[in-house]
Image (cartoon, rainbow, N blue to C red; front, side):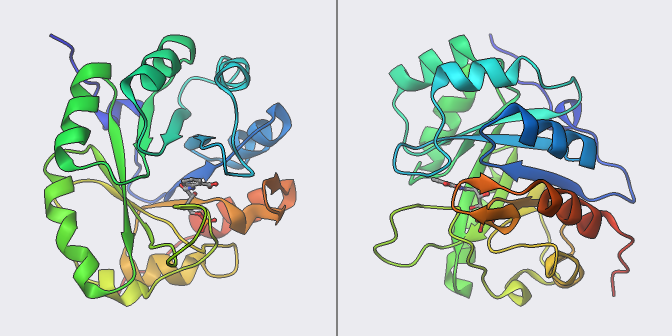
Length: 232
Ligand SMILES: O=C(O)c1ccccc1NCC(=O)[C@H](O)[C@H](O)COP(=O)(O)O
């Protein structure tokens, strides 16, 4: 039987620091910047329509250089077993992020088949969208609460849009969770204060144009997320 690693063994969470995930990295220089800035997760996007898409071979070459202690996350969208088989065979990964319409049953299946902790992304625009959280908290290791894409959007995530963070204020969480959607160095402190998030994820908020990460923006984002926050 496969033993799934505890997410706390993949990344540690200190009482004072906010963990940061930089998503959509495509080259070694940006990964070094993210790691040196203090990111605890780096994300590779496997979605052909995305400007952040990487091939399995590129991700493998990048992943093997990532230092121990930084979690390598593969983001997939409604992926088939055959794709995930090849991905997990070739790329040394710490976690899988499911960013499509995967059902709770599919999350359970993937988690068991690959023995990796699973992050399930859930899109939120209104209070009604929070109803699906419980079912995913029951089966995923970590919930990524992201802004719901607008109807007709090409990308299911990485759109640089945020949602009303007050929807999450005071929520009691069963599982670890991470806030995403339209975050930037300018607004991440406010988002943390309103939601109580201890983990945050960013992609377009640290880019100069779609798919092009800006090293200064990465450093500024991590610093802004990790400065001392006072929760009311
Ligand atoms: O980033 C993408 O291109 C992407 C493509 C397909 C599915 C999900 C995608 N991104 C998901 C992420 O984890 C992003 O970091 C998250 O949505 C926040 O993005 P942003 O609002 O741009 O910071």
